[in-house]
Amino acid sequence: MEDDRALTAFAALSQETRLRIVRLLVKAGPEGMAAGSIGEAIGATTSRLSFHLTHLEHAGLVQSRRDGRFIIYSAIYPAFTGLIQFLLHDCCQGHPEICAPALNASSCFPSKERENV
Image (cartoon, rainbow, N blue to C red; front, side, top):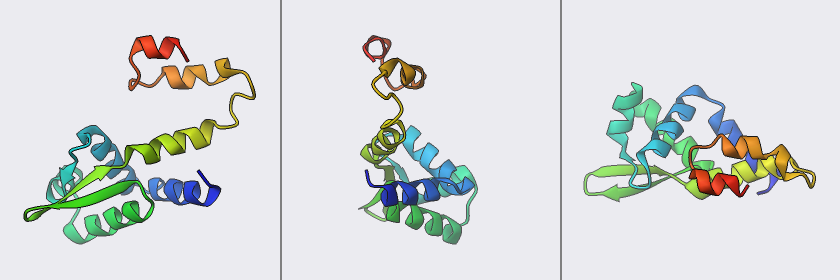
């Protein structure tokens, strides 16, 4: 991941409402959530929500699709993987044990996989 793309993504995540939206969409899984449901969950007006979702889409962190009358938003998981890799790229300096605690703290990896890090 290039520096400018990472900066755009981190800038998008540095705003409280957008961070809450991303966390909600990550929890929702690949099926995503309808815009109205996102707004209800975080207490955002339609115009405010639209502004933040557009910002997240432009940063490459969420995507939208139409499903009948609804617009469904979902997290772009590879983008978050890229951000994590960007942060940890120079972390280990040839010593993977330095980064292992950060990776082991993630509940995304089954314990068997974490042992191999």
